[in-house]
Image 1 (tube, rainbow, N blue to C red):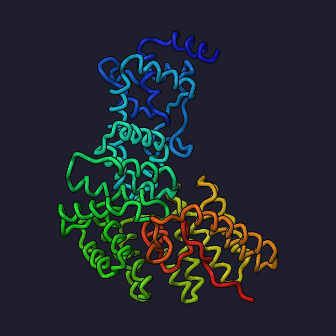
Image 2: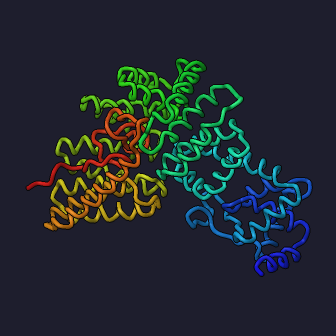
Length: 482
């Protein structure tokens, strides 16, 4: 019955409307006018005809119109989107295949979204990055569809370029699962092109493929080979991509060779890329603190803070502030730690879709607990829990850690039974996870559990302490006072 209704509606369309409708079915996440023009237009449907035909499809209820990213009206440069109901889209895909247009449309679709991702990638590390982050979120379904298409075709070169372009977006979003699976599928492909770009892309691909706990064993042969290729092509230059820049230091950490890691960071200080130069002292500080060099690490982080502020880069600034808050907390400067974390949280809110907001809120709650302000701790923790729920990643390591912060809050409020129950639940979950992950292939990771990355992001070893998300289950604070 439903198909008969779609058949009837389709027959009412003009020839040009049928052409555009079947081509738009290639977009699982809907299409902007610009995307429809780039992907769907050809001699049969000129670009100038796309807008009036879109309007006709809306009038005939084949398409719906929604606002730009996050319900915005498109005034940030991302236009309203045209979407189909899934039943109509499935029918359109059948028509597309029947017309023999599917391969050409998928190629055009992939080329468009590869261009978008590669354009957006460096702008995610510049002033105004929030606009581009929200724009990529609105296009995520389409970007992933393009990547899956290249994987299905075993087009390693295009797939690696897409992963390279999406790597930093994945890091900012902080949503494990699908990116790891996609990266592993791409890493299994062998590119025909041998170039600095491909070497760097393979490093970027290997890092998320290592998984949320940075299990280097999973990717070590590929990562070692890709880093060696990258060094062979550019022996004295720092990679332009920040995730590629972490490849060699992560191997050094894995091999228990901190001197090698610091030599790499020193090389990055002279990078042509201003973002990499700004990040280099933060990376030095992040690694250095694990070796006990607290004073030097804090000085490095203050250099990084000045550099990121000069760039107007909100994420980098927030990442350093999270680390500096840890130094302040270690000194007992709780007011300084709270100020740094609140500024980091404000910057995260400006980005609008940053995956680390729950991490910041949890840290803030733990510092309020140190001050004895239970009301402040409760408010910060409740915000963090809402942010973590909004990430939509299920029963995550982050949620486990936030539960431990809540257990301490309950303890300090005198509800010891609730605190014990929360801890027992979290320990049971961690025991189950450890059992599921156990195996002869694995070996302990060096440098403790995996941290939030440079100053709180999801890349690299943990700064100062191990109380962040994904693999860091020690409570942020000391044992509650008796």
